[in-house]
Length: 151
Image 1 (cartoon, rainbow, N blue to C red):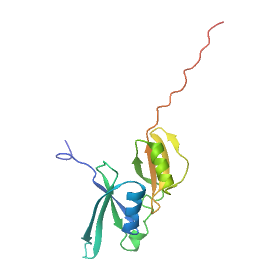
Image 2 (image 1 turned 30 degrees about the vertical axis):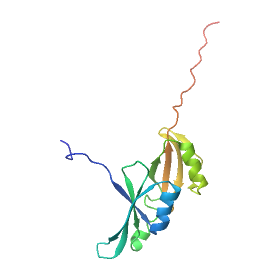
Image 3 (image 1 turned 90 degrees about the vertical axis):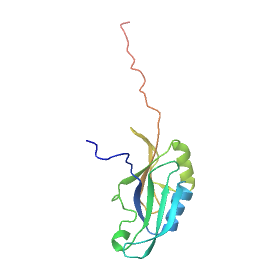
Image 4 (image 1 turned 120 degrees about the horizontal axis):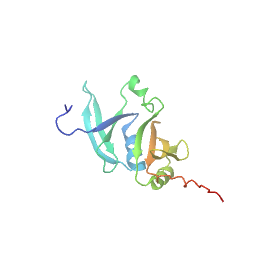
């Protein structure tokens, strides 16, 4: 049995931010995301807010930049994944992306490393959430084992 009728995809992931404009600047100007939408909206109780969506170029899934509303939401700004890496940015050219981001002032927490899933470097977004920058790596092949016959 199929759980859904028709196609399904994850459209948006909310990232709680302190303020809209600095977050837009970070994701668009620093990370190179597209600003998909920035529209006025209302909270459930009628107060004004903005509907702000950014996404990596060519991606379907975007980030909804949601300004913290109240103390409970403000407490999770920068800690949405409780200090773990919670977001994963995949790039085709790791070296170029890493260099561009570092020169733009992105804070990387350690030097890039090789993992089974690719080259990776952990960085912080404008709020302090941890992200993995992930790019492809050439498959490491161990040198052939040398054998020596009787001699």
